[in-house]
Length: 316
Ligand code: HEC
Image 1: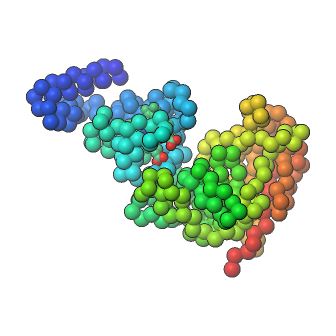
Image 2 (image 1 turned 180 degrees about the vertical axis):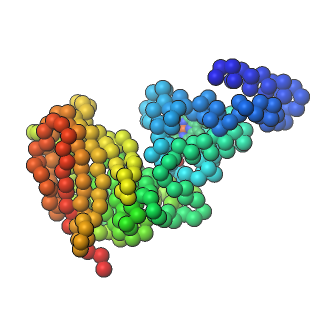
């Protein structure tokens, strides 16, 4: 890598003597094999975003870089949108601007390479701002607007849209399911404003979990709420899956959780939230208002599953 960096730098220098106007373009032409999106990525991005795009770079940041694998794009996931973010950076975060460091072509190539990490999520063009869920689940991250006058805005939110037309709205600063909707998915109105405005969520509310302001679902055995920190999102068959870790107040990880939701078969009057726990220190589950919990509230060390049934308001 050092050699490549040196060669590139050297070519830039030589080119700079001949034609000061476009030195980097010339460097790109003279060393085509060094200028792939992958090489640019490994040189300029991997220290923060991880060589595999998982967001686990070697550099310790005060806020984590995005995992591209689980589609961590607030500003759009097209090559065009990723190029824009790469070029301008994200002010107020460690994500630096590259407009002065890389050529337009290098930025486009690296954005194409970044896009290739996203395996399961369909590309959505920013001009067609409505994200439509087709045969695969979609995950969108962004600001969740207040669901109603009594609810708060959540700067860090996530919404999973499944092919069956249901979508699940989560806050992810402390992972909690807020609402379940049915119908259309979302409109990415925030793309134009670079994250400044909330998502427009298009589905009709079918379940409002504890009035849209739910308590923590998990506590210590003494009833002290645990903090839920998002680790990843994924897809499992037709369902978007969310994974998080639970921490006690001393920041000890006490459990890992994986959950997804689906309507119960039949009359579809209930939504089932399936929660698979891997528990290190025994914890307790708090039954949310308006739900039925299947299984014990005490959760012992080891792997176990709990199912929560949410009664829907019934959509006509
Ligand atoms: C110094 C660390 C650092 C480096 C180097 C870095 N990034 Fe980032 N990047 C971040 C952080 C941190 C975020 C998340 C910012 C936030 O919290 O919104 C981010 C976010 C992003 C996003 C997500 C934008 C969105 O839509 O939400 C993209 C795309 C991105 N980086 C691309 C790149 C590319 C391409 C490179 C290399 C050319 C790169 N980054 C280099 C730290 C870095």
